Amino acid sequence: MKTRIWSTLISLFVYATLIACYAPQVFPWGSNAHELMTDAACDSLPSEISPFFDKHRQKLAYHSNDPDRWRRVLLFRIGLKYEKDLNSGQLTEDLRQVFETHGVAFPQNAPVSLRGKDRRWFITIGEQEYPIRKEADKIYLLGDKTNIFENRNAEPVLLGSEGDTHFTLDTKEKLLSLTSLNVYKSGDRAEGPRHFLDIDIYGPYPFVELPHDYDEAVAKFGVEDVTKRGLATWRIAEYTQLLSEAMKSGDAEKIVGAAGALAHYIEDIHMPLHVVKNYNGQLTNQHGVHQRFEDDMVDAYAEQIHLSPKMASELEDPLEAAFDIVLDSYVYADNLLHADRRAKLGEDTYGTSYLEKFFRFSGWIAVQRMNDAATATASYWYTAWLRAGKPELK
Image (cartoon, rainbow, N blue to C red; front, side, top):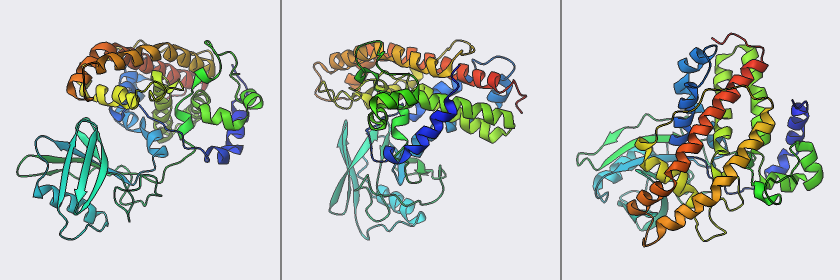
C-alpha cells in the first residue's frame, strides 16, 4: 500500500494554479451511462454495506455526474425532446418563459426556429443564427447571461439553483417537451485533467516510463506535462482516501457525495478514449468519435445495454488498480476506432444508419467496459470501507 497519498494531495494543491492554465478537451461518458454504471455498482456490494448504498442509490447516481458539473463552464442547458418540425410559434413562447423565469432578457418580437440535420443544428432568434449541440433526443443551448448561446467560454452567471429541473412544458402540437433545465456554476478549469490519462504518450505498452508515484512522475516529466497528459489515476487514489474519511465520520451526505464522485473518475478511465492521445479521433480524421461512442450510441441503444457486473472484491492498492484499469482500457481503443471507420463506410452522415452499424461493431466494447466499471466502482467503495475500519453505515 502506498503511504504517500497525502503528500500527493499537497503537491497537487501546490500546482493547482498551473493546472488552471490548461483547458484540455475533455469528453465524459454521457450522464446516462454514468448513472447506469453507478446504479449497477450498488448491486455488486457485499451484504455488510449493500443496504446503505441501496438506500442511497438514486442520490449516488446523481452525484456520479458531479465531476462533470464541476468542470463545466456552462450557464445552463435545456433538454428539448423533439418529434417532428420544431419551427413552431409555441417554441418561441416556451423558450421565452424559460429565459424570463430565470431573469434572462428575451428579444422582443423575435421569431425563434430550430433547424438541423444529424450533428449540425442551429437555433435562430430573430435574424441571428447560433450553432447548438444535439445529443440523441436533446438539444443543448449554451451561453451566458448577456450573450445567449454565442460564447461557450464566457464566464457564466448563475441563474437559479444548481440542478434545477422543475420545468416540464408540453406544446399543444405535442412537438416539444422541455424535459430539464440544469443550471451550473462557473466551471473549475483544474478539473479537466482529472478525468483522463493519455497513457500512450509515455512510450510503448505497458508504458513503464511513467512512474506511478505522482511526485516521481512530476520529478521526471514536470508538473506541466504530467497535468496536460492527465491525472485520473491519482485522483482516484485521492478520492478513495476521501471516501474512507467520510465513512469514518459517519456523515451519510459526505459518504454519498464522495462515493458518487469516485465512481465518476473510475468509470471515466474505463472508456478507451480516455486513456489515449487520439482521444477524439483527431489524429486519424475521425473527429467526434468520442461523443459518438459514449454518448450518442449509448443513449440511442440504452435499452439494449444490460449490465451484470461481478461482485466487489478488496483492492490491495487502489492506485495500482487504477493504472491496471488504464492498461485494460488502452487495448480496446484501436478496436473502437476501427469500428467507427467501418460504420461510416457508405454513410454521408452520422445518423441512424451509422449508429446502428456502430453499435453492431462496438456495442460489445461499451457493455464490457461499463460492466467492468461497475465492478471496479463497487470494489473501490468496498475497499474504502475496509480501510475505514468497517464502520456501520447508516
